[in-house]
Length: 215
Image (cartoon, rainbow, N blue to C red; front, side, top):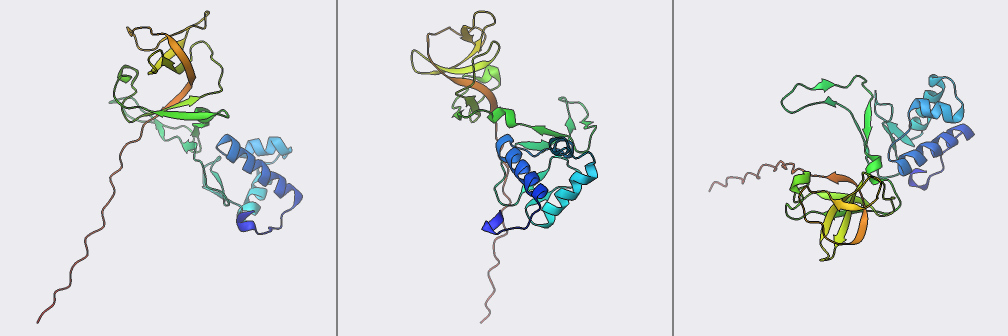
């Protein structure tokens, strides 16, 4: 409980809190009202909301209005792996707003697995795959090698190469068209995603005005 304080909860409130905590920490985002109702056999959405409001009043969770999954724990830093869906857009085209006001997109699958790591890209040798210098390639080192997936591997020069797993043979081939096929020395892991950060300008505070001293 927050700050190590004992908070008075009913048995059902404690069970729901532990369910929320498990989903948020281990899955990356909270359950919907419907998920909670199904898990605890609470048929009325209002019944679930009563428990959530009680947990909120007692300082254990916080909720954003009009967002079904936007439940945050009060006693732990949040790993934000789910964000609200604003809409969809094509280059040069108008935005298509999301149909549902509480629809969210989860990126938790990018970080699934017990052994996740990343490679920072330097240079533009992967540019034909739209992976450029400064990007971070997320890899799962314990995911199975399935046909169609991309993997990061080391070749016989100990250089990183990106390969695809071929259908039928499960052999690795270079993901970059026309690239020379080197000997794969070691598979580092299955690529689950690419993270690209954009620089956000920081607003500089105005310089303090020196007082004018008159003599």
